[in-house]
Image (tube, rainbow, N blue to C red; front, side, top):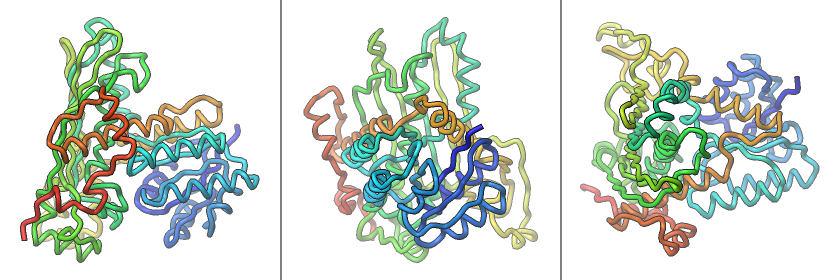
Length: 416
């Protein structure tokens, strides 16, 4: 069996999470990593865990010559530059089977489209990594409700949320480098998941037409003086100068182009969740049926009393972004599988080895970016955005939110 030889650009949190997931995937080797400061550590992890004879490379060009799939896991503001290096490597003779990019595809619609255009220039298939659509709980739930959907009709309301206490890396907190705040970082997950769940069985992911977006953004925790100072100390990001939103919520209206049925997707995301750790929550209703998914309902839990709390070395061993080391804590035994990372890698593997499209390509990533930017536009303008308006569609191509432009104080009040 032919094997994929992956090369990672980036060695931070998300790259490490994918490396953990790779331990559960057959037919794929991690053979190279490029990163300015952590490539050697990730390469060593890969070798120790039998993921492949992984080497730390100094340049993207070297990486491309020694792998056959390149995975872009680098910070958002670097992706255009990295893609140009990949295209140059292909022109120089690199024989790649495909490209992977972690969400979001771009900080703006224009940036996302530029990546699509460069991939086409290199004549390479693409896989857009949006893990929540690959969650086994989502897939099994849809399988279980398939008879009801065929008999009664598709879902009409889906609510999707992702919340935790904040990102691991300084660049995630920086609205200019990241492209915004929690809406850019996590809203893309919830919007994509809700759109997918509202799609009738057997229809393409973009079948349901988005016709309107209404959203709000707010800075509820990390704009307060105590938390601004904490953020500045830990991450070197000053929210008194250039803040990003730590809470966002909104509603997207979709229309079925065949039946004209109107359905709704509600999303809520935050970096100020103060419970056990990261929570993904989805629920939905159709005619006569419903579902609910909550990742904090874990199969195991532990209790740590005050006397034993000092012995806790790493709270995230039990759950990603865990905020506590004592009390009653959920334990998730396999987060990489729970959140869909294993399944999305398997989908990419099968697509690139068998010459079929991945479940999501980069063009789909452009559409998700467009909906996120429409949400920022709605929050900034204080009105519902009509996505059927050709003028709005043109504006979205060049739109950049005030928050992403480093002008967050204009739209996010700071209490001094």
